[in-house]
Amino acid sequence: MKSGQSIIGSRPVSGVGWLDYFRKWASKYDREVEAYDYDPEKLLKPFVPLIRKRKRGLDVGCGTGKSLEALKTVCDEVVGVEPVEKMALQAEAKGFRVFRMKGEELGRLVEDGVPGRFDLVAFFASIDYMNVELVVAGVEKVLEPGPAGHMPKKEAGLVFLTVEPENEEKVVRAFGERGFRVVKRDTRKAYEGQTYVCLLMNKG
Ligand SMILES: C[S@@+](CC[C@H](N)C(=O)[O-])C[C@H]1O[C@@H](n2cnc3c(N)ncnc32)[C@H](O)[C@@H]1O
Image (cartoon, rainbow, N blue to C red; front, side, top):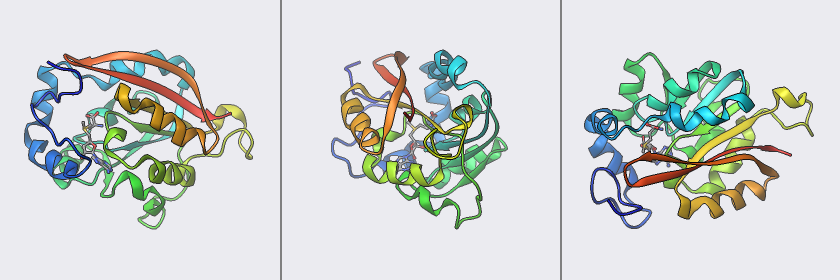
């Protein structure tokens, strides 16, 4: 399989149409990614010693809940955000709380009934489909402030994300412009034909 090609064949070339693409994939998603050995917990694993235990994790673009299951291994409480109803319903059937919204709208979470901030915001195989500048602005609203804020360093907010190699520079720049720095970087084979760059970031 060529690099950048989806595990379910052709996918939109331009940035439009992603939500339709995932709507169509939703009912087969778990079966197909499991057949390809996609396991978000494996992507997170090298970062666990640095992340240690967090109180509240937010999984943006949580899909059917596979990445919520991974996030749950390092967080006392997890919440998902997912705009595709058929994906969100599957995550809810696994017992997770999921808010219907795009990653670009995170600032709305508080209005939608999620008070307080998160000390870990995660994007597993999802930020590639989002407008990163809008996403970062929203992350700032929901993430515990960094050590420059009132939080002790160990309680300050972290961002964990996986990104396709060709989008890494854009993503690191967008977060960097808001004062985030990369704490740890790793590359992992997510499944046949796709390697992800995995990044842990905080406000330095
Ligand atoms: C490849 S799936 C990954 C799902 C899940 N995180 C996992 O690891 O199994 C990408 C997910 O991102 C969601 N997504 C796409 N565009 C999005 C956006 N603008 N905001 C939030 N989620 C989005 C899709 O609906 C889909 O559920």
